[in-house]
Amino acid sequence: MGIFDRIKNGLARTRDQLVTKIEWAIKGKPIDEDAFIDIEEALILSDAGLETTEVFIHALKDRWKRGQIKTTEDIKSAMIEEVGHLLSTVEKPITINQHKPFVIITLGVNGVGKTTTIAKLARSYKESGKKVLLGACDTFRAAAIEQLEEWAKRLNIDVIKHKEGSDPAAVAYDATKAAKARGVDVLILDTAGRLHTKANLMEEMKKIKRVVNKEMEGAPHETLLVVDATNGQNVISQAKTFNEALEVTGIVITKLDGTAKGGFILPVAHILKIPIRYVGVGEQFEDLIPFNAKEFSKALFD
Ligand SMILES: Nc1nc2c(ncn2[C@@H]2O[C@H](COP(=O)(O)OP(=O)(O)O)[C@@H](O)[C@H]2O)c(=O)[nH]1
Ligand SMILES: [Mg+2]
Image 1 (cartoon, helix red, strand yellow):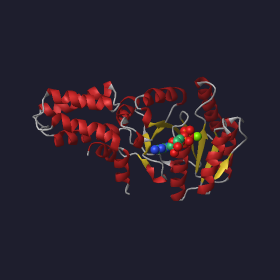
Image 2 (cartoon, protein in one colour):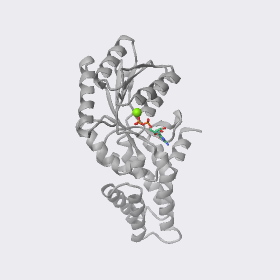
Image 3 (tube, rainbow, N blue to C red):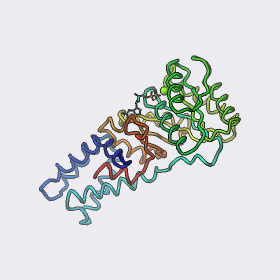
Image 4 (cartoon, helix red, strand yellow):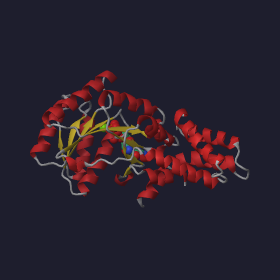
C-alpha cells in the first residue's frame, strides 16, 4: 500500500464524520446559510474546536458569498485548500543531519505510543543508513525497559539502560556520552509517561534535558511530544502543559486510525502552532508517516 492510501485508510473514520455529514447537508438543494450550520456541526463533532471551526466557516462563507461555492464538490475542494493551507504552517520535517549525534527526547503521557514510535523512527533512520542508539530512560517499570530492548533486538540496534527504578537522567547522560563515543548519528531517548505526580514527571523531564545539554552543547536537538489522537480535543491541553514546561519542538500524532476525532489536528496547527513531524495511522512500521499537509488535507476530504 502506498503512503497516500495508508493515510487515507487511517483517516477513514474522521473523513466519514466530516464528509458524510457535509454531503448530507448539501445534497440536492442550493447551498444556504443552514448548510453552513451543518458543516460547523460536523467540524465540531470531529473535535476541530470552536475557535478553529469559526475561522473555517468564515472562510467558506466568504467563498460562498463570492459565488465560488455551488456544489458539494466545491465545498470539499475549498476545505482541502483551506485545511491544507493551515496545516502547511506546521509542516516542518525533522532534519537530523545538522548535528552528530542528533539527540531526540520523546515525551508524552503513558500509553500514547512513545516506545512504538521510537521503534518506527529507529527503523526508518536505520534504513536510510544512519547509526542509531536508544536510551531507556523510562526506568519506572522493568517492562518498559524490556519493551524497548525487544524492539532494539529486532532492529539490531544498541540500547543504553540501567536498572528499574534508577535515575532516568543518569541513563540519558550515559546514552549521550555513548552516542558521542560510538559515532552515532541519532540517539533517541525513551521516557516515562507516568510518575507519582504530574509535577514530578515534568521535573524529571527537565532534569533529563539539562543533563543531556551538559554532556552535549545544543542537545537535545528535538523535544518530541507524542500524543494519542483518540484523546481528541484533550490533546490540546496536554500539549500546552508539556510545551510550557519543556519547550516542545515537534509533535507526533499517533492512532489517527482509531478515531473519528482527527479534526483536533486543526487547532494543533491554528492554536498550538507546534510543528507536526509525523502521524501514526496503524501499528506497522510503515504506518508512521512524515507529515505532509497537502496529502493530509486531501485524505481528509476527498
Ligand atoms: N492503532 C494504532 N496503535 C498504535 C499507534 N501507535 C502506537 N500504537 C499502540 O499503542 C499502544 C501503546 O504504545 P506504547 O509505545 O507502549 O506507548 P507508551 O506508553 O507511550 O510508550 C501499543 O499497543 C501500540 O501498538 C498507531 O498509530 N495506531
Ligand atoms: Mg513506553
